[in-house]
Image: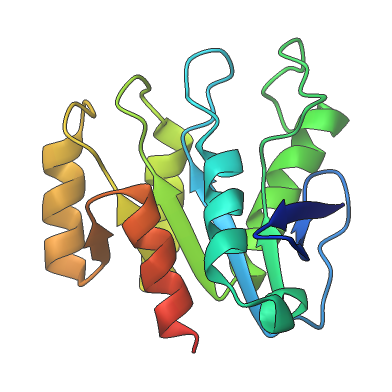
Length: 170
């Protein structure tokens, strides 16, 4: 999906792919938006992150960037969390493929959620993670110590984390 935004009178676009769309190749920078999703509980921080990337990236480089957003609008809570369920298996496979392909993994822990899958993703892909773990997240202490001991960049808020990733890629 290509999202188009209008800001300061100029038209800009950045590629955003969501499951079950195939993950595109050929972008200079790919960022996976890992973190809290728990539908109905977690804030839709992914949309905020997309808008922040769009605002920070110069128009001439936006087409070089790909954002992978696992929050799918057609998620069905009735899908059985079992590898035998083809919908569930496809979602998890899409996420793992995207995490492997990503240059950066932005992990946001919403304090209103438990986010066990996000904790798993942080552990598996910590080498390329940038973490936002606000006060109030139920395992903030664990995340803080993990990031400290494994050298994972931890940033105070979502806007600063997006800015950090953009700066790292210039």
